[in-house]
Each structure stands twice: as C-alpha cells, then as structure tokens.
Image 1: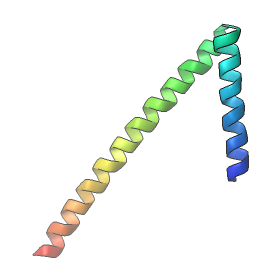
Image 2 (image 1 turned 45 degrees about the vertical axis):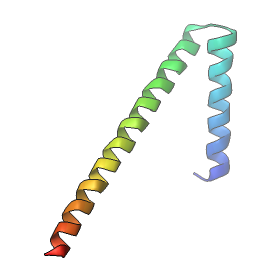
Image 3 (image 1 turned 90 degrees about the vertical axis):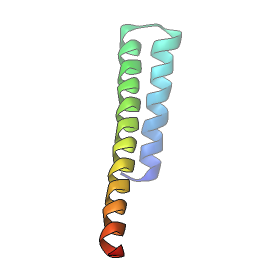
Length: 67
C-alpha cells in the first residue's frame, strides 16, 4: 500500500467516524470510536514494547562487546 492510498483511507475513516459519531450520534459511530481507541491503545503498547525490546538488545549487545 503506498502513501497516497494510506492517507486517503485514513482521512476517509476519520471523516466517517466524525460524521457518524459526532454529528449523527449513531451506534455505528460509537463502534468506530471504540475501534479507534483500541487502535490507539494497541499502537501505544506496540511502541512501548518495541522501545523496551530495543533497550534490552542494546544493553546486552554493549555488555557482550565491552568484555
């Protein structure tokens, strides 16, 4: 998927979520907001996991090469 397609899908999803949740106040809009919150939490956990994993690898790499 190229950048243009990604941004088109992202903007469309954001517009639909805003339309259905904020303006029309439908159950589908609430579902899209819930999906967005889960994606945000998943992204936060993934970034945290990646940072910790990188730090641990770097620590053991330095420890191995220093001795």
